[in-house]
Image 1: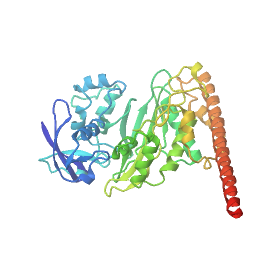
Image 2 (image 1 turned 90 degrees about the vertical axis):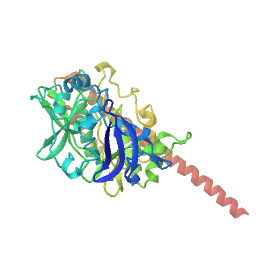
Image 3 (image 1 turned 135 degrees about the vertical axis):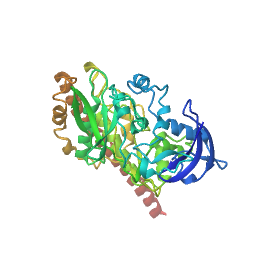
Image 4 (image 1 turned 120 degrees about the vertical axis):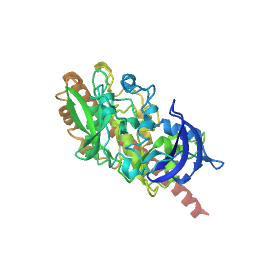
Length: 409
């Protein structure tokens, strides 16, 4: 057993013990500051819910589904990704939590990855490369990166960038990330900007960390743990209610924008841990929705050419199982400037032009399907407008009848 204090920057939160063999939290003792507990981890009868804290802690580790993770663990002489957490003190580039040995005088300023260098050994091993030296350093934010695609953090000109690979025969995810950011730029949707990197013919998406030393990402999943969801309330309504209860501004417009983007690009994996909100790590004030990120699993990324069909029924998350149902959750389409999307197909054609994975036939089909999705979105927006107008007309008629009745009396 190893004893630590869970820290939030320099604020002691709770003392805990980690099992050296499994990396799980075995016990929780002194609570120093309950206000700084991770969002969604509750107190029960004056004590921290150890199960919830363990779920949060385990959720920081690299998922077992990560591409190539078994080979990487063999290289690192570890049995489980969970064990990597302790090696980097739980530090991340998504928030300001970490574990400090109880007997240590370490401070956040000297260990955090936002301001201090970190090892690229783990990231290189995750990408199938050897460290190049005998002594591998495990002090890396790659230990706490989520998702199933290969990825690694790298410091470039003093800034923190995430480099993410594609998958399968098409390696399409990096191209999709770039396209999604171009669409959002045209529609003025707050987003993380992605660029394309090609090494040895393989594409990678590159984006700068949107979290700073003063902020942190809280995903939708953890926000929704702040209150019990009634059975009669949908996941969508529960998320909105939780945000409203916490005083998070402008959530409705951010949800509308996200759902519109996901409809356009046929996103199949907008799960509850790749969107959320930003809060100030010092004041705990919620600043608003996080910019949209992680949109690569879209545009039929893993489908063979004959299955690319703009009017098909791909899987959909997080609120409905089909995009046709989910787009009906959008409350306002009036902000969309459809003219800004002219030529976006040619822009995607240019993004993928030199790809050895996306050939001309696939490129042409994807561009045609993208234009069709824009047409379908315009139709959905028009249908919503007509429905609102019809509802207003019915209301006006009813109101006039009631008013006439009052006059007759």
